[in-house]
Length: 209
Image 1 (tube, one colour):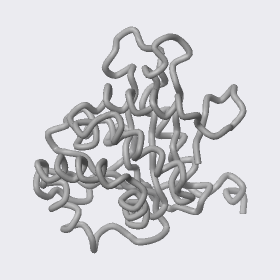
Image 2: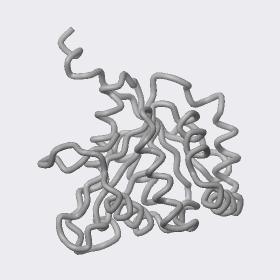
Image 3: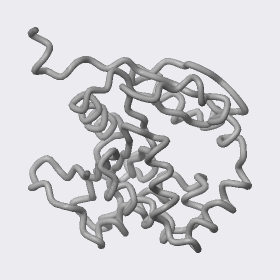
Image 4: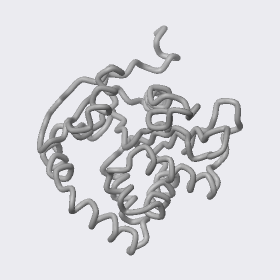
């Protein structure tokens, strides 16, 4: 599922928008394994997320040129199943390229294995990625990261999630500080990675019950 600008009708993201979204990801998060693997790999990843009913993509393209200087976030209700779906959906050549990049950055994989018994299987949303061109391009008018994160968290709540979880590298001080500022608390530190979670409120319809 995809979220579009608030003043637009919700429509499936067009192929040209997937390209802009992938380029925005690479602009905002150049050091990730997926960015290093190439724009075509990122396009495949977002295509897989958009086809996954358990995943949600928030994308606010820039209203001005260049359109890829927007803001984005993606998350899932079932991160293990979504990761499996991505593996099945990516073309073998693209998956091989991504796997090679991930193999050169093994700490995240090791941390995930350590966290297998820590992260709940149900009742949570997992933030897969987030970025805003406004954090890296001074002239960008893209929404701030907290705006797209709030949209994603709202979708989590609408789908019955009681908490939102995310992980990042400890060396990424900007991302770490961002999640702490937006209400996340640390759960674990392993292999240079940090796992965080945030309690979410019930849907508005249930708050008066």
